[in-house]
Image (tube, rainbow, N blue to C red; front, side, top):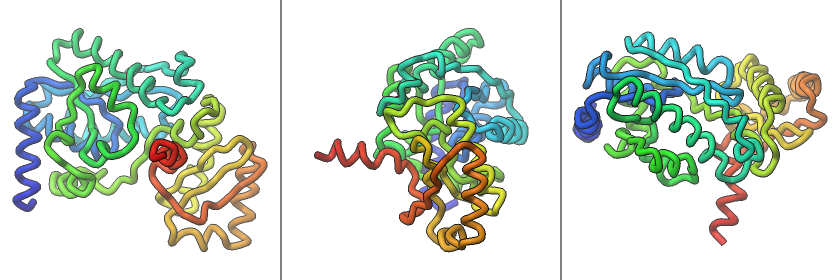
Length: 276
């Protein structure tokens, strides 16, 4: 690690020491994995619990992946069913959908930390997240959730570098936000739609496509992949295979987005509106 990373990591550890014992809102991604590792190394495993929220919006493989990371770090891992699909404010999929999701999660976590006698909830939010449209940050503030990585100024590049130095296998894991993020705001989120999305992305990964998103637009699937992979998916033979599979999932139209993969692309119309 270089001096800048050393200072940032030391700052994150200092924040964790102040908290003394924590429940880490743990997705199994690189950001929350780094916070979890830092908490265990700084406070000890008895003072740290990894907690993952489980619902229909969590891709099926992500929970098992989170379990493996927590086991490798050597910390207790708890799964809480969050049931946000019982909340009509979430299901209706407004622009602040994430607020209702995180409110449900943090409400459950507040009770959990109280029951376990822990001092605080921390999450994996990083400095880069603070410049994006993330309503979930409001829910975190309302519930007193701390973000030690963001408070220490850690960026995504910092997090990946630190995770690699600390031996975390997920240091290069692609971001995997909840499946509901693939549905346009205002279009109702249902477990059936999310299963279609997940099945489509699993199929693409089975073709060797690493970073991909299936954006659900009614009866049309809009596929985003990294730009170098676009010519391969546009090949007539493979395109026909993809089209047939997606139709078997229930889509009537399949589109390849020529702009390529963009994290948070569903926010683009909203950000344009806010800018005006």
